[in-house]
Image (cartoon, rainbow, N blue to C red; front, side):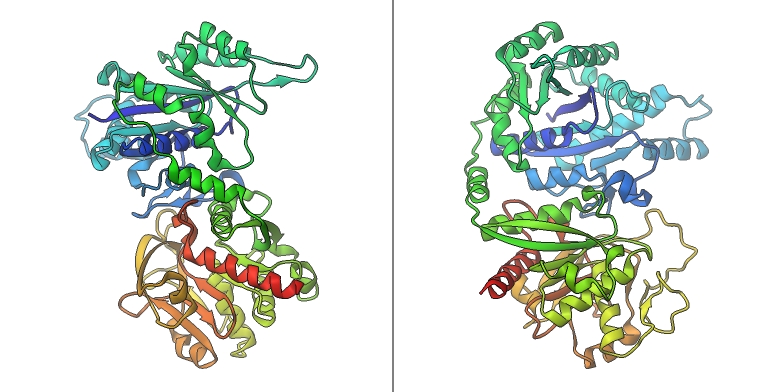
Length: 537
């Protein structure tokens, strides 16, 4: 029987519930259990696909094309399991489903209410993850903070699930902040006590309390919280702020986190085999080299907008024994006059994905600089499109070359709408989403990185390479490194003999894992390290 773990947060937002849930997933997997994870988000958007990156951070895309919360990226990176469309649920999706059922007459004239119709829909979704994955344990994170009105239907649904499943088949983990007051030089437990009281007022008694703090907690803190929050003392787990996220599972296991969880759920599982994870940490701690990668984007004020890209760069750095120093560069600040000065300190560059015309000309400046100075460059999605536009302008001589997204009046739209799309199409959920196959051209840099002829990568885009210009661009020196199986869609481009100038229409960052870095990011980091040696020799 599938066991269900529910993770809630209290006191303040941003405590790292996702990291706690992901770390637990890694620990349970290390015990030989099959683990699935999901996130319940209280916002009314159907998904984050149309939300501003400044508000929400990046949109994480699953193999089956779901646009999801960035916490799912943490789950995949830690647990190393592909998630799916059942892994992220929003209030918007719930109400969309219920209202459509009501319109179809499926409720047979009933008065549609939050209880039972909304809560039943949530419950069905939670159960579906266990059924679809046949997981031993499903870890469900509930977004927001206890006390938020938006989260109440989700909390009521999981309360009902705990009753339906019975004892030892469900578990509640509550993550709270324990603040440290400098004036009195002591940690305070009252916020946690009040948060637990709020949770209990909703009919939920937490089984385990995870205490987030910046500094180690005194022994009396654990005893006090155990006493006043009505949990066993070993069910109070310390979660200290650490510089490297991937140390979190080992840190939590020092408090016997997974052992306590297994005991509370009556799971008989062997001790966790953390040899692979320990090796990863040894690599992280053993880095001696340093490389600077310039990330040229339009949302750099919020680093979470490029969370998976940044993590993928770090993963490649771990494998190469290098600290990757990311230089965050606002593309709006780049001009033909200052690009060389701003980018000269970078060993390599990356132009990530994005939408809209803002900052585009600065990205084009960065692509030209990388091409002319043999600076390693990886262009992702929009980044690849930028590289095509720059090449068409500078090499092919098409001065007004552009994307139809940025200039619909351009005479040379080297990037344009995907087939069968138009400007009238709705924005939500209509992109090319999820995993698609790509045939790699032998002898290319792409082939050298992957070491195979066929790959499968995740996409999130509406515009693509315009085949009307394919032959002319190839004749001018652009190399098509990868195509869709039917040969119609240009998936990747590169330039030879440039050491590393690769653009891909897909998002390789979503498949990078700390212990399995993505080959394209490894290619970029390794080429950048070589560039660093040349610059300093």
